[in-house]
Length: 123
Image (cartoon, rainbow, N blue to C red; front, side, top):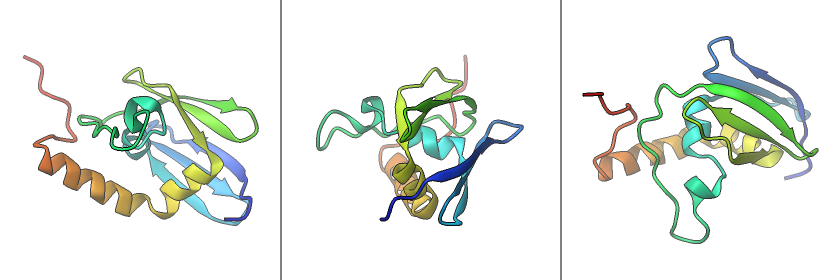
């Protein structure tokens, strides 16, 4: 992929979507849940092959902050306290172009593991 730069990042009023516009003309509305469960952080991706974690219970997660990380990425914080993912421009673009397929894979993983997108009910 040639160098693609974001021209605008905008968090929706309800804080559930990050819209990213790119220099290529592509514009993606990225759901907070998708970004949270596919965070590039070691907490989600692990520290090596085969260590990726399937993160349940994030259907209602919202974005609490978007901070620059140099000139190459942003750090996105979520209301569940997760804030260690550094989302590079190419990764945000990938979440836009392949996100629906990746999320379908995630939903299959949840089902296979008996997990849910919903937070567990409080007792």
